[in-house]
Length: 359
Image 1 (cartoon, one colour):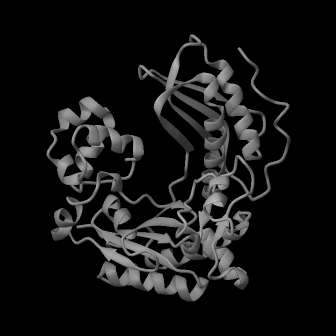
Image 2 (cartoon, one colour):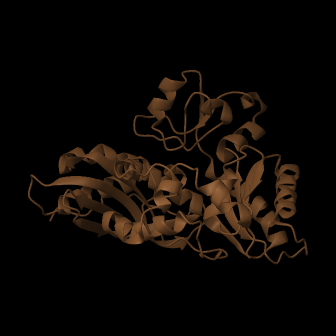
Image 3 (cartoon, one colour):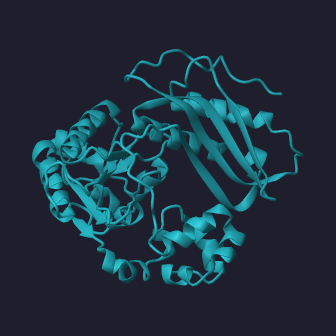
């Protein structure tokens, strides 16, 4: 039986800011650029009490808490702390799979230290993080990645939770289906329309029914409802692409997608910054009301050097969509692919004069 630990730093960016600036401690801190198009990178736990969450539009966060202190993100500082944390992980195992700057999976089945109990390993890692970075982390311990990730949320902040193999059903079945990664509000609504509200409800449905409604994701739902996840922890896996998508409750015309594309471009840009890599190719994904999927892509001579450059390229790609004007869309996505490693600040150049032309 594998021993998987998911470690998630608590309100990482905001906690770094509060650590480095004592005047921010105990106050609602929002890590975000100000502006109508900006989204929240992170919110301190004080800010979260007002309902502020990551990826929320910054203007909405300001409305929820007018007294919130907005701090622009400093990714160079966050990356430096992230490297400290990863060094701690590698003291215990070489099987470390970073998901972003602030979270990672660890396979501690055969820990370097010889420690046998995954709960004790997780506790020691969290203690070392606290002592060496003055930050806190939460951890989930389970036989696989899916369950470990859910468990890491259970005792946040600064806690840990274990799902023993004998307790998987007791833990999993009462959960709402929105606790399954990939089940957002739209998918949750579709499942509810089928009478599926909890994981127990989901487990009652045959694989064929779930695949008929949700395609390949139906198979994933079927397996997750049974606590099955055989994915290995892949050490230092390099990100090949990053994307963000919106599924609409009502289908939209092409010219109504612009504000969604702008917001998704910022989410994708922020996610890319967390990977410490840079993407060269901009990808626009659309799904029509009849479920036809279209993608358009463009690779400029220089990688996009800002979220504005990414957004402008993504917007320009809508002009390459050659469908009837009455076509309606149920999903839009903005992504980056063709990744390579770069040092902070290595990308230069202005891209706004190098846009794809309308076809």
